[in-house]
Image (cartoon, rainbow, N blue to C red; front, side, top):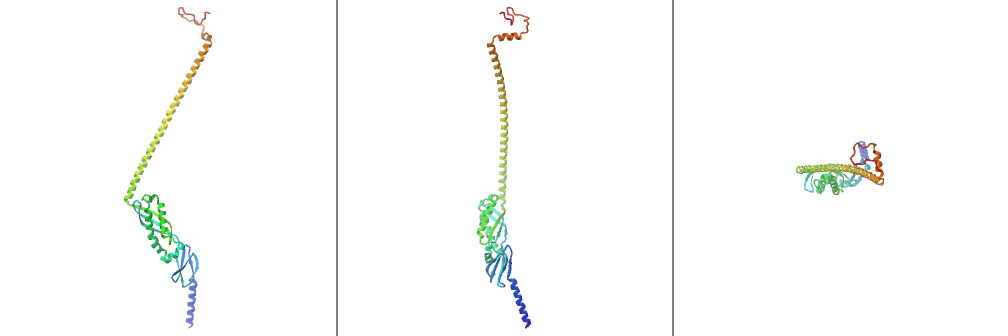
Length: 282
């Protein structure tokens, strides 16, 4: 009997210890706890230490940290009907306010991703991809990703937050890629030809400018020579005019000039009947 009582006491103590230790639980940062009682969700728990009823309540944990889902072989048709294979990724998280809904409907976060994001992402990508031409999917990649993220967020907003999407690679058919390469080569040739034409035009402009400058310099030199000749002519004419006016004003100046320049010698020969030079008879 004493053994039975002792065993009962030990059992009670063990139960009490289990109840004591089972009444507290800890939720880590980056998680939220879902507390159920008899299978029914009664509350969600934030990070920290919490109390629960032992043997009655149970706690499941759901992460609210970011996770990334990679889709290796997505598909889409561009607005100009070019088919593409697309590798993309979706980074998502579960808002704290959606933890209870996720647990009630899907039990785990992975189940929710498989049943919500996995089917919605390809459909929303194809819808966004179809708004762009094949060329635009390359040069407007950020805009395409933005449209995709917006559409996907609207379709999963009850359960998830779509933090970002990345369109990592878009691969079109070989025929389309060959066509793009041909177009690029043709465009490069056109640009090269335009650059050569512009270069030739610049060189022609430089040559024309040099020729105009040389011609202007020659004209300036010729004008300077003409101006100098004119100035010398004007000076000589003015000197001649001044001499003429002086002679007219003083007739004796001619005789004086003759006398001033005579060396005092008579000519060796005389013309018959001619007067003696420079000797006045008056």
